[in-house]
Amino acid sequence: MIDTVRLNLKAGNGGNGCSSFLREKYRPKGGPNGGDGGDGGNAYLVGDPSYNTLLHIKFNSTVYGQNGRHGGGRNRSGATGPDTVMPVPIGTVVTRLNEDGTKEILADIRSETPYLVARGGKGGRGNTRFATATNQEPILSERGQRGESAVLLLELKLLADVGLIARPNAGKSTLISMCSGAKAKVADYPFTTVEPVLGVVRVGRSDFVMMEIPGLLEGAHEGVGLGDQFLRHAERARLYVHLLDGLSEDPVADYRMVNDELFQFNPELTQKQQLIVVNKLDVTEVREQQEELSARLRDAISDSVEPPGGPGTADVLFISAATGEGVDKLLRWIAGRLAELPKDDLESDLEPVHVINPRREQTRETVRVVNDVYVIDSEPLERLSALADTRDQRVLLQLWREMRKSGVAQQLVDAGIEAGDTIRLGKVEVEWF
Image 1 (tube, helix red, strand yellow):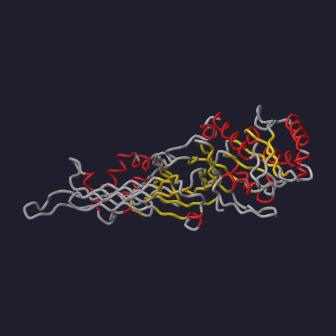
Image 2: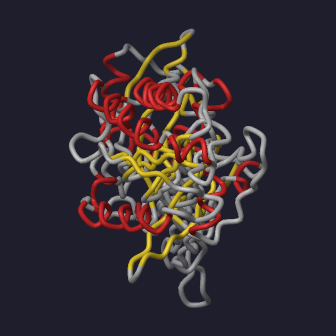
Image 3: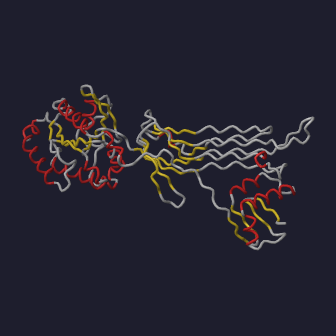
């Protein structure tokens, strides 16, 4: 089961603005009419109930958004790039990998509401936008803004009402196959189930989702038997059915071991409601020791320093998953407990985030001297100079006007610039005059 994926996303770039002038038969100097570029498409993640793994992203883990179209003459604006929407299973936790290597949990996708993960770049302005009373022939136009990039770590934690937890070969697959339509593999050897299995159980007029979690071994919280991967899915269950093998050498020791693994992985898991269920009642040996084993398990629950689930969890039921004996009683108990538990219990640990990346702020323009070259760090000025023909004296004059508006010109003077010195704007170098 593919339940962890690294996803590289890049939103679309904005289209470039156009530098154009109106030239008609009776209007030879009609003025600037370059249109703006279109915005780049955003990138979204959206919950889709039809997916239950991240396999569709595993082999398509790099996604590029669509760019906005460039602006045109006659004040024609470029088209906005369509958004990119990536479907993911409900229950996917989204973590952003920052440039410094730190990780930041961004969202827990539990609905079909789209979540913005990378914002598309703004379209560049056409030369019409720069026309003023003192600059009636603007030549400059802007390059489109680059779309945001994001490296996301997606981790699927399946959502279920009931989690079946046990050691290997306790009968979980037989039980979930009997009470739901799940087609779990059943065999008489451990680790028959190697990935979580979901099944919908109908009890009267209510139904709930039951999830079989593959068998847990001692050390599962550290990854023994892939236990850490299995326990990840157990975090989302509202209550647990702790299934014990009645033919085990020591069912009480099995009970303690599994709960210890839950506590070691995440202490909050032991606070969920649990029902202790002993399987294989159809075997004479188990039926004969029913009362004794029930008393020992109740003592083990009461002796626990951290009783799992708090009050009301000392119930011990005996069933036979093979014959169905006691299964109806078990399902009625589960339905009753689920009705008492708050449905929003799952939503208390992590609030959904509807906008992951805030709108980026404009950085302050700065000037620094590198090897006698005056380097200007200014995204707006870099976007203006990227499309300009710096051999044209009019372009240099208009760039100077924009530098003066933003305060960069004064910073250059304060830094000691003189005529003939070189200025660098992004990849463009011009001479100060």
